[in-house]
Amino acid sequence: MTANRLTELGSERVDFRFKGLPPEAEGLTVAELADRRLNLFTDGFTTPVLALSAERLEHNLALMETYATRHGLAFAPHGKTSMSPQLFHRQIEHGAWGITLAVPHQVRVAREFGIERIFLANELVDAAALRWLAAELDSHADFRFACYVDSVRGVELMEAALVAAGASRPVDVVVELGAGEGARTGVRTEAECAAVADAVAAASTL
Image 1 (tube, rainbow, N blue to C red):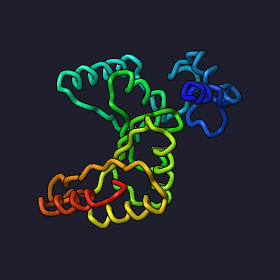
Image 2 (image 1 turned 135 degrees about the vertical axis):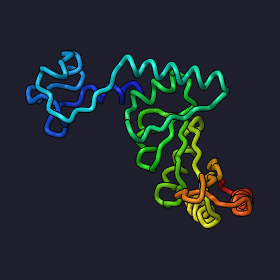
Image 3 (image 1 turned 45 degrees about the vertical axis):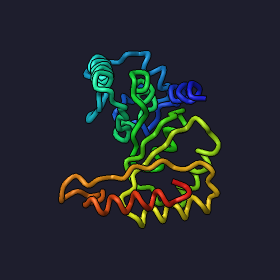
Image 4 (image 1 turned 180 degrees about the horizontal axis):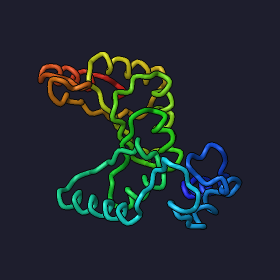
């Protein structure tokens, strides 16, 4: 399914939704446009245009792979900026453990394109999203998912939603520690950390 979904991206027709492309690109498929190898500066692109250097991308992929291997790291690069399934798969091919994402919709996109390991850098308490997640985990034994928890109340909300959804596989969670006094999220003290961890241990679905 993954290969087919990626191929479908190349089959999409260029129209008004595609920002910055030359007017002459209208009606071409994405793959056809890419095959033309148009010049960014002389072939009608309108600014601003986001450009990515293939050489630098390959360098960075190889560099991160080398660094993670040398230090024994399970690296999950953040995918929310690019939201590019092609890049996700290249990062995984270069040794990434999985992909980090920020919100449930991004997780659904990644799953649609066959990403098997996802870390959600957020506390997931939305009941609808947890119902979908429970079904996805139950239906796909190879799917690995983890997210943050940073409050006892958040753990309680997750537990209630997952029990209501009839989840059979527990959701892996990581207690998030706040990075300094001004941190937006995460527990602030050792006592809070222990309380959240105890709540997780007592939950049947986490």
